[in-house]
Image (cartoon, rainbow over all chains, first blue to last red; front, side, top):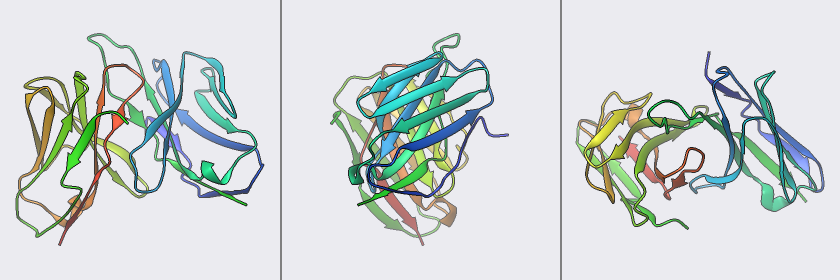
Amino acid sequence: QKEVEQDPGPLSVPEGAIVSLNCTYSNSAFQYFMWYRQYSRKGPELLMYTYSSGNKEDGRFTAQVDKSSKYISLFIRDSQPSDSATYLCAINFDGPGGYNKLIFGAGTRLAVHP
Amino acid sequence: DAGITQSPRHKVTETGTPVTLRCHQTENHRYMYWYRQDPGHGLRLIHYSYGVKDTDKGEVSDGYSVSRSKTEDFLLTLESATSSQTSVYFCAISDTLYEQYFGPGTRLTVT
């Protein structure tokens, strides 16, 4: 079983739709939960991160972590064509010795059409 | 953009030849990483470094070696390239547990 599972999509939605992107993970020790966005032919960039559980909001984006279900979500409200990209979830934990490797999901490709 | 560059940006090489990819940073970050990205697999860690001359293997390290003789440079070497190593290679740097800054990527084709 992979440590992080993510549906690769693709996901196609009309402009203005609410988008829900999800990942599941297997290790309950994970504490940091991130969402990276990657435009075509570019490197990924951090969109949001959450430490431990709960919600975090940033403009049209909301990241949600449910540690009891080992489930993380990213919601995009009022989606725009400029949101078309691949979204990768990533996880990490603050282990002994300073564990500093991220584990990425496979990425979900999102297309928002006008 | 974080000060991270990769060279070359594109390379075509033949099976069996050695290839070295370079990652250069101007941010003085402690950690540096090499990933490969393939359809259906996402980003997979090849090797990473937690300091000068300190490196460790990632999940797909077979056929790859790395070196870091200076804080700013992290080299990835394919000793004898194979077609299965055709991929997009990303370098990343970080100083936190949650944020990595990625370079622009190198597209490598092994024929």
